[in-house]
Image 1 (cartoon, rainbow, N blue to C red):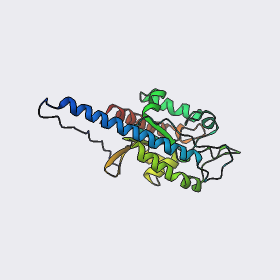
Image 2 (tube, rainbow, N blue to C red):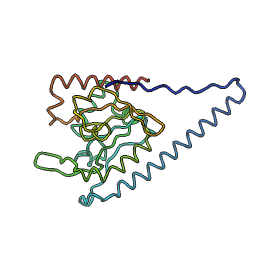
Image 3 (tube, rainbow, N blue to C red):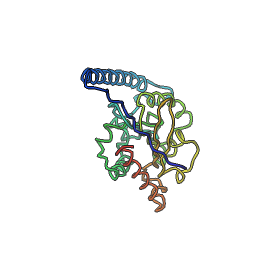
Image 4 (cartoon, one colour):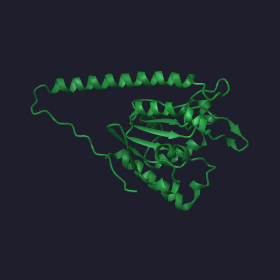
Length: 233
């Protein structure tokens, strides 16, 4: 598939210095006001997500999602696990350690990454445990959370979106094989804006896919794409 890059936005400069200071000040005020509205809208959305009981999960189970600090990027995983629930933080367990090892290879410190990338999941709550570990969200549970994900995406308006794992990848790229999409960059239009989609496999230690030599090469390509995306268009 053909890879594309995002075009850089170019702002016109004024013809003279007259009114320049006032123009910059006005623009900054407008931006600050927009960020406050965005933060307020997300706080309201967060309260609604935490109150949601559509899936009929046990009492005390609540949505887990990351910091929302005017994010430029967005990462979407599968669902939180026990560790994430305990700490109230996505990708806080073993899978998270592996994920942030990959991201470190792209030059990202974990806290730095969490500060500019909003981290969430296809299912907001812990779906429970089975005999072989954490359960995979059911289709109905994913459908229940889909409107939340749409609202998160609309508020974040990310330049880069990272779907992690088959479930999230299919949400944004359709029914595909991991080997066909990992290590590639895609452009998707959302209204008048464009988002770069760079998929990653799920970093679970139980995944045999990530340990195959040919697939590790694809992961390395994806890591380079993330590094390139961070350095600019």
